[in-house]
Structures are given as structure tokens and as C-alpha cells.
Amino acid sequence: MRNDVVLTVTGPDRVGIVEQVTGVLLDLGANVETSRMARLGGEFAIIMLVSVPAEWASGIESAFGDLTAEGYRVTVAPTGRESAAAQRAWLPYRIEVHGADHEGIVHEIAAGLSARGINVESMDTGTSPAPVSGTTLFSMAAVVAVPPGLDEAEWTAELCEAGRQANVGVIVTPIEGP
Image (tube, rainbow, N blue to C red):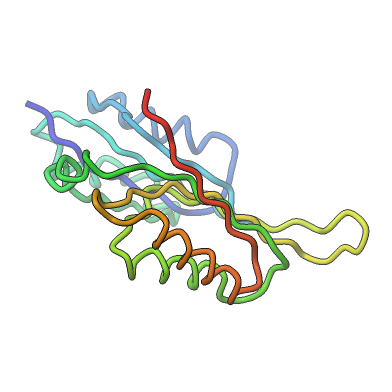
């Protein structure tokens, strides 16, 4: 029997950290199903959905003792696959946001989504200098799950208005099925 857990590892970026983490998982007989990894400043963050033999599900953190001794933070949480199954009928959309960077953009967009009961599935944000002026530009790409029956014209208009209030452009696109 196998259990699914979400494993997070954060700490200083260095060559070989992904190899070390995945080596520990391989030794446990675990399988990485989905993962995201990123270097943020001088830190490295890993988040993974891992299928692990049941006998390791509650003790997986102890297998990462070498990393925690080096100052890495390792956390393990059982998944809520049941709640994910309930959202299968929800509709996927891609949301893109672009504009001049300033505080509060992510919050404004997230607040607009949560007010309508829309779940953020994934989100990537970044900043870059504008080609001519050097002004810092913000960009965001998100995938969201929209409850069935929610009026698309209404929630997208509200989200675009939240973007207008935050002085950024918002583009909402339905994601077509396979």
C-alpha cells in the first residue's frame, strides 16, 4: 500500500541538492509524481507530490536527517486527494497579469479569485526591467479551477476590474480539455 504526501525542502541553493533529495526518495521506494523547484535569491525550494510506501509515510522526515543537519527545512504533509477528486468537475482557466510592478498586485488578484470561490492551482510571478525605460515590470501566470455554474462573464469582469484597480492588465483564457 502507498500513501501520497507533499514534501517540501527549502534551504541554501547548491549544486547537487535535487540529486540528494531524489536519492533519499529513491532509497525509500518513493515515486515523485509532481514537483516544482525554484531558486529564489540564494535559496532553493522544492515542493513535490510523492507516492511513498505506507511504512514510510509517517517517518519520511527522519530520512532527511543529513539535510536538516545542514540547515534545510523539510516538511511532509499527507495529501487531501479526496478534496481534489471533488474538484474534478471544476473548469480550468489560465490567468495572465502584466503591468508596472508595485506592492499588492498578487493580493488583489488572489482576493478577486477567492471572493468568487475560485481555487488557485498554480501561480508563477516574476519581475523584469522594461526594455527602454528600465521600469520594473510585473508578470503573473496562473491556472485556476472555477466551480461549475459560476457565471464566466461575471467573474472575469470582476477580475478584470480588480486588475484595473491594481493598474495591471488581466487576460483570462479557458483551458481546453485533452
